[in-house]
Image 1: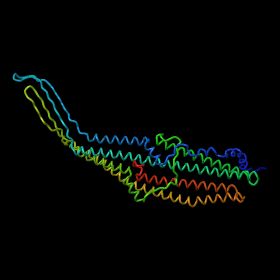
Image 2 (image 1 turned 120 degrees about the horizontal axis):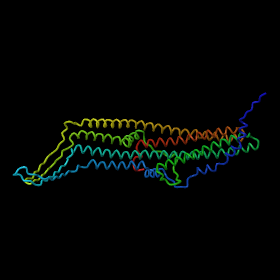
Image 3 (image 1 turned 90 degrees about the vertical axis):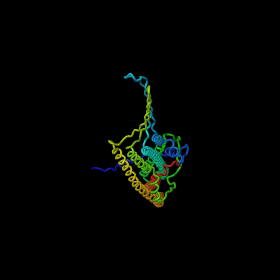
Image 4 (image 1 turned 30 degrees about the horizontal axis):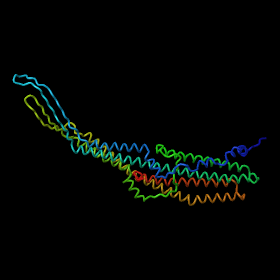
Amino acid sequence: MRYLVNWKPLMCLLLWPAMHAWAQPASTQMANSAPHNGPSLSLPELISTILVHNPGLQVARRARDQAAAGVSTAAALANPRLEWSEGQTQARLASANPGRVQGWALSQFIENPVLRGARMEAARANERGSSHQVAIVRNELAAQVQLRAFEYLLRRAEVRATTEDVALLEQVRERVRLRVESGEAARYEIIKADAEIINARQRQQNATLQAEQALLSLNRLAAGQLPARWSLRGALDDEIRLGELDEIQRQAQLHNPEIKALQSQVEKAQSQQQAARASRWPGVEVRYTESTDVELRHGTLGVQVQIPLLDQRSGPMAEAAAELERARIRLEGRQAEMRQQVLQAWKSLEMARLRVEALGQGAMREAEAALRVAQAAYRFGERGILDVLDAQRVLQSVRADLLDARYQVQAARIDLDYLAGRYAEDNL
């Protein structure tokens, strides 16, 4: 005759001492979530520090200086050339006089002013493009810093929430322990409470580690120049200020550094096309030559011009035209893409705001009220520990969703500011 044995209660009883040891008060984890003892930085101070020390931004600025030097290179005039020669003449006829012969020549190339002006304008457009590249790097870096900073604020809020969860679960476990010791509840209830505490502490540890990783990523952007044990002032629910959608669309088309950089590329391509057309007549070379022998001094003045007979410069002109068309297509495509990105970020902001409103005003209050009712019913013996733990898990889930929704609001706001180019200026 066979007997069926349910091993689940038996395994719970066997594992209960180990779980009880894990469920002791979490003083270490709470200490890790305590504020840092180092300096406290605001978000503008953090951005300013990172912008000063970030290597990528420094490289972009050096490239801008190089492009500025290229303008001087394009505006430089050709140097004159001086030639000197000396020789000896020999008499082949009796009437000729042998002697020393000397000569010198001076030549100056006079460039086509249209070609030179087009080359200088292309260099200036390249300089403007390099300045816009600095603004692009600055805009992306400032947006990335803000996103990482609010990620840290999210993880810090999660640490506080999980710390509260652990403290609340420990209070629940203490009441369960008293009921178990008095015989009013089964031992399984305290085992279940210990398991919930272990899960809550794991969530607390994960949130603490993620917060530390966010700080490390910010310090990496600053090339390790942030102070030791620093902390960030701010909160996820900081007030945001944004204009209307049409205004943001207009700012994105006018002030976004990517659009400006592409416009500079179009201007550069136009100047290069003009230079390719003018290169058919590169300029004239004026030359004066003077030679002296025993009897005579000879002086000649000449002009040298390159005639576009065999090479009409059709290849460079076609290449410049194709490059100009490519630059225009890239500009128009990026402008259209920019409008869609702004609209998408605006919709994300609206959805995140609706989530915050729904969770903060409705679901959060209902979850807190349900937990209070479940705790009161458990104290009077009307409900079991599973009802209390289920209500606690619902509250944890709603609170986590609320924190994530607040973070999504800030992320959408940062995305809109980034698309509008508000981080590209040096006024942060």
